[in-house]
Image (cartoon, rainbow, N blue to C red; front, side, top):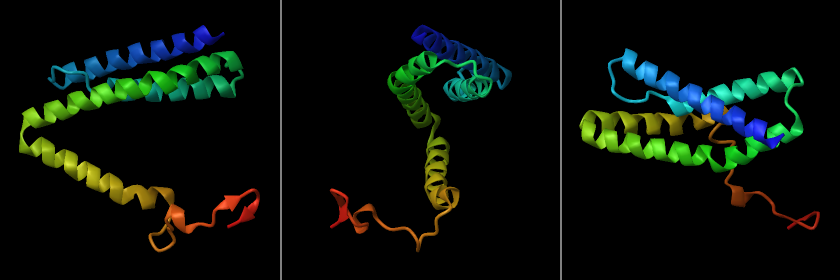
Length: 135
């Protein structure tokens, strides 16, 4: 049933937020430390486990996919806006750390995709297909 997929997503979200709160408390930070990310990873691992053991019906998977498309991007955007506000109030070091993480992440895209810079072509440089033939 679709409701089982929604329940699985909600359970992963609650567990992730609890783990994030506990991590924050253990490190002496009065904030949730990565709860949304932990919830998303937990959802990926649980659904992967259920799929490999044939315990995830198609209707349950459709419930997960529905809320995946609706809910998780909203939660991630809300968490990101809180992180930006905290970074600005944290001072220049937090802003520089965020900028460095962004630059390193962008620099690692070719490494992680396995493409070399000289092999990469822009999308508009590839031939366009129109009704089965190249244009």
